[in-house]
Image (cartoon, rainbow, N blue to C red; front, top):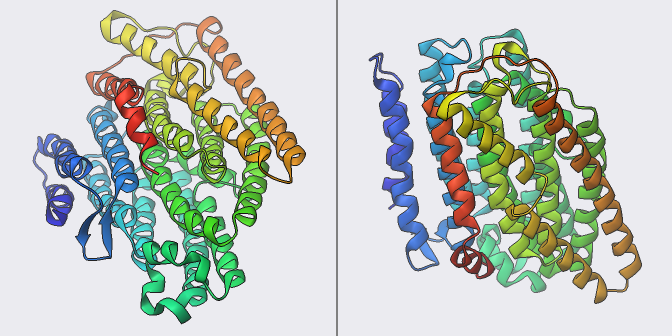
Length: 470
């Protein structure tokens, strides 16, 4: 099964060296092949040992793997018509897929890893490969931001590595080499002889993971990179990389919860609230789609982290799935919304004609309203369940008033973001001049795929599965 997971990436990597005119269709088709072994893993009995105790498939990581594979297909569909919206050389197009193949292998390793060292290797592989995907856009700004990403990414993964070393050292006296295994650490978390050392390692690793998702204090680097790169790269970051990184936080936090739940909760709540506070006002001042959507993605990842440590695991997973489909859809739509190099909001939802234009108009409007949690968006329900879990958690604690005040602050910050998105939607629909915009099959297919997945996510059977993951 491991070979079947790697085979599509190998095919993609080899075909990327071809100069045949129709090779881009083979490259796109190879991303569909990714889905076959992943669906098999998703349906089989779990836990499933893919590679001894090093790579293990469970309900949580198979769900995340399914999410990112669907996003990969959507991004690949939009890439078929990328050249119609931006100037890209055939050589750079193939180069993108070459490093996308490496990126995908890194994600598979990090998502399925039951070993902290292997998790870090997969994360590092995914980080390094994305540097070259950013540079697909042959501009000075993109090259500069690619180097910035390499530096910030290096800081993030270095923090994660240092934290892993401390967590390993805290449990090594009782677990030996098994102190690197997530499952062993979770099973013996209450027996760790140096809990303070573990908590320090967890905090450092968590900060490294948060930095990679654009959390405080590095809120702007991610938006700058996604602005400089081609829009499919931004979709890839939001739907695939961020989803995989937050899984690492889930793994570490589950162990930290057993060591000292209150320290975990306080650290995550404070860090995430500060992040949302800064992001809310950056969103309020944002002037273009990419920055608006990128900052919104940071906000949603912070909410997922808060829901998870508050005991709202179902809410966190539902929110994560909705974000993984909605946010890439909006990023892919920017290729059309920002046609002719127009980055302003005014009139962006004007100028669409024909069947494809009307479908695009409907789907983008739907995604814009869904991202701010208007019903029947899955984010509407995930936030209700998430904040309910926080209130339930507060009732059983000695810090009831403090947590309730924090919830009120979060809701006020979310209302600022809500206002900005509603204002942007009004500007897109009712202001500005109408410009003719072309919509192609690739974009419609990608958006339709994500819309269909959102519908499946809300089915009773899907919700039941999410409730049974943790």
